[in-house]
Image (cartoon, rainbow, N blue to C red; front, side, top):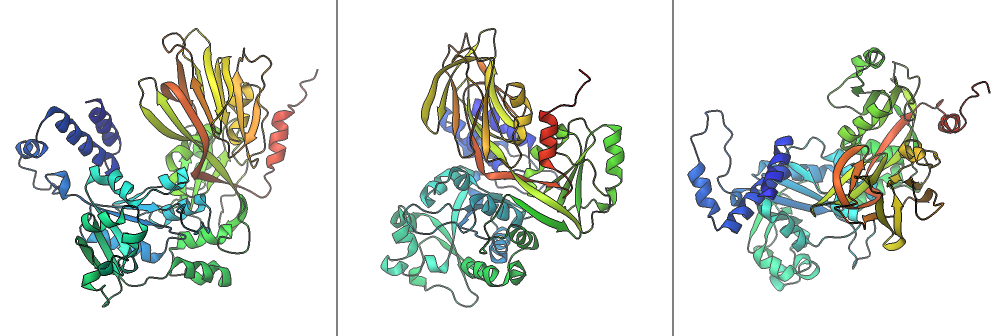
Length: 523
């Protein structure tokens, strides 16, 4: 019952999320199975006359069809987007896009890093209704076989795998890609369902098709290898019409698929700025934001944040998945992430974009429930009683500190190194530093233990080893409470990051130095 209640609360918080609604249905069916109830009979008995303007919904979950559309999307093209739109128009309730991580048994490699593939996929399908983007494989850096992916989504409806005609060629002889290269492919060929793309007027041979299939005629396919070659030889302008404009602009900005090495810092101009404005409640913030209201647009290419660092954190939590740069304008106090001056005429203005990592935090609550969240600044555990916390610290899977007695331990990104981590004795680092800070609050044991700077690909796990009744600990993510936890694992996300925009005159190093060397107070 707890699972159903939790799923219902999440769906109520975001009723437009098909994944949340599907989780409610799955939890309801699980409850019926546990109690020995017939879910279909209960659904039929519960039906009442709908209002005249109600949208028809399937009476049972099995009527809900889901298209699983897996591929490298390196980059995602117009063909991929058109395919998703056609699937939705063809009666699929949901299309799940899953960018593949390279298979361990195949020589293919990512041509763009996982973070870039995640961003481009989000941009390409940003306004696609009924499309869910599953970035778990990129974030976990592993390939999930199609059979496991089918099981993952089976509770949400009737699963159909989307493949091109090349994947079924040779099916009559048992030599198709599905039958020979997919894990458990022979069984899936007989039992699973497939949507088979094919060019207009050229369907696959009937004998090559799996028993449960649906053909979808779609034109305009261009292999992503050809798209990458066009960029390499002619730049991002060469692929106009083959990818959506926001993807082309992202490729251009970061020099993807060229001989250049993508960097975390790039320069760009916004010739036609379209703003989403996030503003703090202070009068100064409201007044400064008013000068930019004429540039507001429902399809933004830049997020203007007016306020202090707290307003920026709020904006990032709310809008990072838009994959647009954040331009801060300080109307607060510290403003480490904010520009002091930004011209109200943004047309053609040049900015320096810094890609900043986000933390992926996996945690376990005191009642054994696993959770996951994202943070921009920091994540920490701290004591939740009058007793000190006892914590074990594992780094990259190896125990480095068997017992830390303290008030708490914290992991911070470079942006968070000047916040709570600094209060714990950590040294603020430049925003572009490829490090994570591990700091402790009132560390009693080991004696004289000091904060550490770790490589940004480090995975740190903090586990409570004390009696949970006597030494409970609670978790926080960017200052938001997670409740009591028993473990927290922190790493840089492979799919979540934000770009912060600064004016060329803004000196990140000078801002850091001013914070490290406060002005003389006359002593």
